[in-house]
Amino acid sequence: MRRLFCLLLFTSFTLYSQVVPPDSLIEEVVYTIQNSIDAQNPDPINELFDYDLFKERIFAGLDVDESKQEEFMTGMKKGFDWGQELVNAIKLEGHYTAKSYTSGSDTISAFYRMVSGGGGINYHEYEIYYDGEFHIFDVYVFLTGQYISEAMRQVVEPLMLQDDSFMGRLSDLGSKLFGEKKEYMNDLKQFPLIKKALAQSDYQKVHDLYKDLGEKARAMKSMQLQHLLALQHIDTALMTEYIDIYKKDFPDDVSIDLIMIDYYFALGEYDKALESVENLEYWAEDDGYLQYLKSNIYSVKGDAENFAKFGYLSIEWEPWLSEPYFTMIEYQLKQKNFTEVINLMKKLRYHCSLEYSEESMSGFELFSDFLKSKEYKEWNFQY
Image (tube, rainbow, N blue to C red; front, side, top):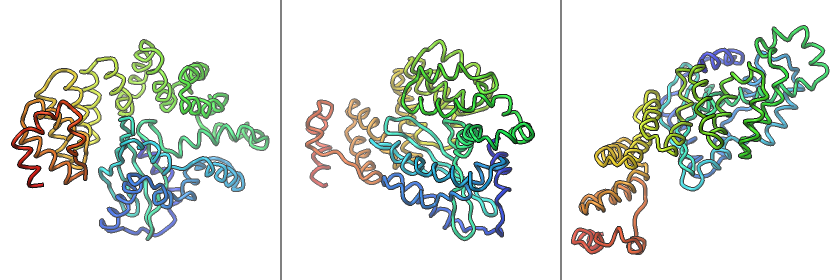
């Protein structure tokens, strides 16, 4: 569905001749986005963001004059900083990883995984236009189940309702302009309030606002997902009830699994947590972090074999991920397999530029026998 949305809106501003960028240039811009965020520097990604093309996405099909569009965009830019939002999300040991990309004649879709500082996982798909230079014109956020431009439209439409000249035209254009949205016009003003309450962790307010919405608005994918994000902090029974509703309305959607991993894990329903991770694997192929999550779940289940299996698979698939090294090192320390501990520490230093100092290890009982071992002494002498 999001692909269709992308294609329909993109036709409104595809005015240039088609230019096919070489793979080397695509990879350069794909990794510029990743490195920008990992370096905690939002500027390179923000410089790629094309607000003119983004504006056309937001207002496509809406009867809004250019001056009103510019007024909205000026205000939006004061509060919208995509690069900084990502930098803030991955602080405290999070990371942003380019996973894949596909390219057409003049457009590129680039797929990224975001692990926040708290360990939460999300995926983003960037829509990028090329005309000799690269332009990010939208981003699909899997956790919210919508493009950023769609979220902005939910802000635009309530503002339009406050415009007397627009309201004068609405009686004639309402059905043509908004289609089914005319059925929940009165709810549009609630959408930014729900988003704001969720950002402020006022989960009860999110629930109360959601209940006040009309049937059509409550059925919207983005509204249901925001409601579920709040419910996991409020009431388990309600969460279960609304999960069933969401799955019935969107049976093939993966956004729900991004929420359910942590939810099921917190409830101790580890098999369901594993099922959610495995659902994500259907479209996030060869994802080492998902193997790491499976390893952790098997650990608390007490399944040492699968804990180690998926921990090492995570390292094999993405050797630059530091998290699985730490868990596998701890596992091998407990097994007294000090040769393997050293092997893992070497890989950690080579791939992640991280290492254990003797001073840091000496403060933990777990490393006591390792520091006394001949394997460590020989390696430490060589190193």
